Image (cartoon, rainbow, N blue to C red; front, side, top):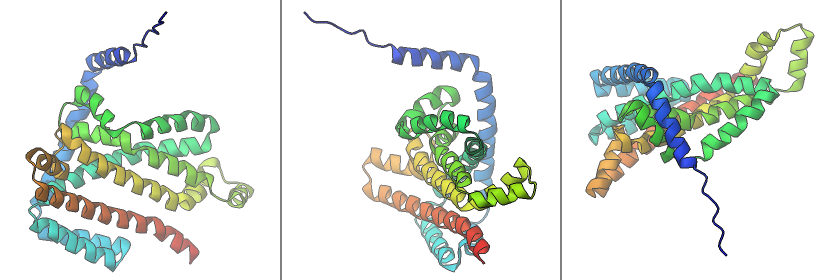
Length: 283
């Protein structure tokens, strides 16, 4: 005798919930989508308005100031190569999406990380949610973004923020918790308030760890922006997606190399920024 266990209607429940949310909070998502769309378009047009050679020089100078001459030379040569490969516009679009998505992710992740570090109860609630967010396949985040924000760069940005926020939260909390106890005791002995301890002791000491989290958020943002080309995000991911659809491996490899160069520039700069405070403290 065969027994059939009824299937839990999880998929149906999720569909119903998404339909209800789409119907009742559409005015909020449309307003948010409008704001983010203006921000993305304005930044892209502003960066493309500058001559590529001038923007490349500016980036190289910023890289030299933040990370040293080796990173500056690599940034200069790498971006010149992307300009020569006729990928400049796509590179600017991808960089803009990464920049905006990372900024939003950090703005959300830093306060939550601080809250999780200072509150054991908050940590017990936040950490399982982060486990869920980090283990969920990246493609799944594209599904709910479409009904709320439609196809295009805004949906890509929202999905990227959700996917890339966990490292900032985790490493912010970790950095604050790893501050030596004797420093906390010394601050208490001098009568520091909780706010003073946070902003004058814990956060400054945690900067290298926090920057490591931001670095990982940037890398995840870049990887997700490429995946989000499937829903019309454009940029270098769009070039890769077109190459796959048209069976143009050479064009796909060119875009892939461009993504690697952009990722290496962002990675090296943020790594050095994270090391500088600790180096200054050591001196």
